[in-house]
Image (cartoon, helix red, strand yellow):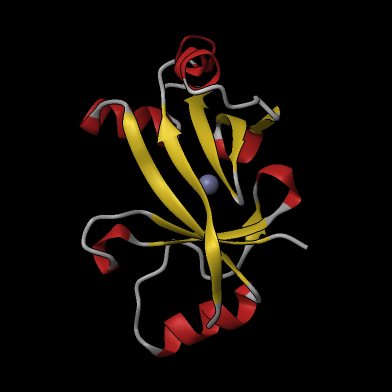
Amino acid sequence: MKLLKIDHLGIAVNSIEEGKNFWTDVLGLPLEGSETVTEQKTTTAFFPVGESEIELLESTSPDGPVAKFIEKKGQGIQHVAFAVENIEEALQELKEKGVMLIDQKPRTGAGGAKIAFLHPKATNGILVELCQRD
Ligand code: ZN
């Protein structure tokens, strides 16, 4: 499997509207866009930093994964996403290595990227996302 870079850090916030000021006003990052991924019950906002991005995540529903994360751990880094060259190959390789996956096959994430999550139990507690952008 070939990891290309850290694609983004996903940060869970109660409110993008309130949370974005630190990234824009204090750090001076541009807010590139915002998108709701209905399937994930999540609204995302992207702030590019060099070749990577900060991705703020706000839940659209109290039973969404981001809301559950905040309930358990509070606001903060929710996942780290690596860009891979070929996500199908990467998932196949992980299965062969016996790595526990949340997604057995890629699904569509924000920006139309193909994404898949590894199970935090397989990664010492970190939610890891693989991401392929074409
Ligand atoms: Zn992500």
